[in-house]
Image 1 (spheres, one colour):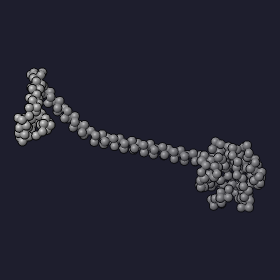
Image 2: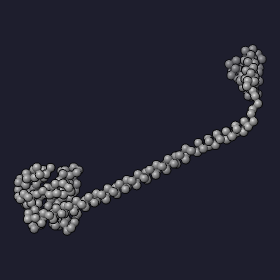
Image 3: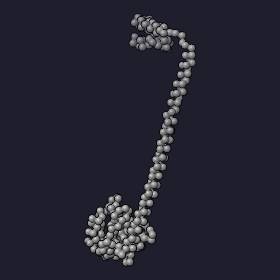
Image 4: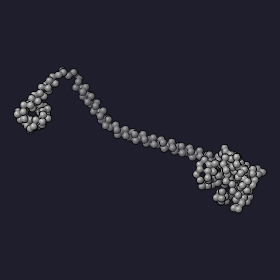
Length: 254
């Protein structure tokens, strides 16, 4: 055995921790190597000196306190080992509760929005119908009477905040009667008036909240057909006691 390997085994040799074979080999080497033999003697003297330092009788109850602390440490480790799984479950449950609460809140918000939107739409329909009926109760449903779009369109300049697209549809069976101002949805709006035989058609217009074009939506209220759509940034409401098919035809021409 080389000295380098023997010195690695000195500590377990002194503590009698080597196997029988290794112990025999180290003992044989020490018999022939003064340096390794001196190292072993030095280690033994140091061990003996350390063993004598501060040696005193252990106080009463020390072993019980040590055992108690060891049990506490063991129980704490057991709890710590179990806690991650518990906390994961709690965390998942918390996320599920939060998700459920968010869904409930979103559902409530959507419900509120739908109800609010429906109420607003219903009020707007009522105002459009009221404006249409008011016009029929007057001697004339228009403030500027003309079938010429070039006369009606300039009349709106400065009276409304947009330029209405005015068309004379006499050739299509919907002659233009003229235009007027009205008040719908807490705003000043433009109104074009068309005739279809003995029926009066009011077409209310104002700037749309959204610029997207939307297809026409037909509703009925108080015996009148209402057609609503958005086009080129303008909101349109066409209203008459015409049947729905003829009202849709007018909408397609505007």
